[in-house]
Image (cartoon, rainbow, N blue to C red):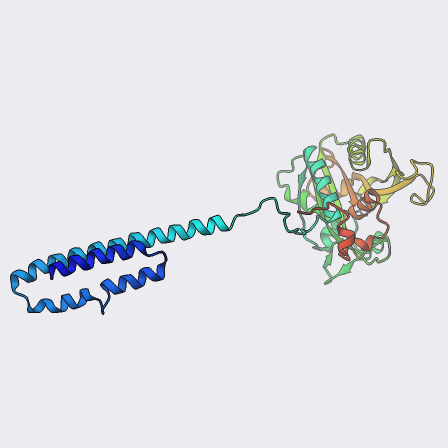
Length: 345
Ligand code: PHE
């Protein structure tokens, strides 16, 4: 029996080393170790042997099983490695092939203008704040020096949700909110970009549009500061050779109030259809914060002064990019949107 096992072992080892794939290896394994193998028969016949022989043959059988199992395992590893190498060899990646184009979204022109303005004002030390689009009559009007029944309220033509709450018709309630939130009543500078809502709808007006509110409160803040700030803003957004002019206007929450025009970039001030032959284009409302507003919000108007401005983002974007219909911003026509910040990978 010992000799038989020895012979089987040599045969098996030889066959295992000749296997070239997993299935032939499995067949060989069951031929020499499986239930129907000669090895199993030898083991079954062991019961007829003497104790002495049983011990000897048993030891041989253990060696046989260990050596064959190990050699099958090693062979399997070898086969797998070979297969992997063959696959790697075959699946070469040609990095010179052109890639598939993926179209990614683009930044919306409104967001591009907001980001550009944020960068500019942050570089001048302003904070950027965010406010609610549904706000109270108190913040939107009353505390901005527009008591109930004030004629200027009609001009806003707002969307009321309840008696007291409305979709904000401008970002100016953020003036009130930020002054009230500044509990220590310290000087501050901030801008607030956001959506605003009015009952308007035509080629140059939309019922929803975007504004940036600016507010600076501190000691000795003067009209000269407002002018200098807006001059920097206009030159940065529309080009170094632009000039601005202040036109006296009226807002209940600023005194004095000004509308600010920029010299027309299409005709350089000579007069053309874009500026309606005036040489100037209106871009924002501004003024010195009204003393009533300062004191309603807890700032002593004898100690503090401030300036505020409200810029229409769509207007800036339309002028900057030569867009003639405000509704293009909201209809999400990809052909329009892809004119800005085009990206293709
Ligand atoms: N809130 C005003 C508007 O929407 C603009 C403005 C802001 C004017 C700040 C003066 C100061 O028309």
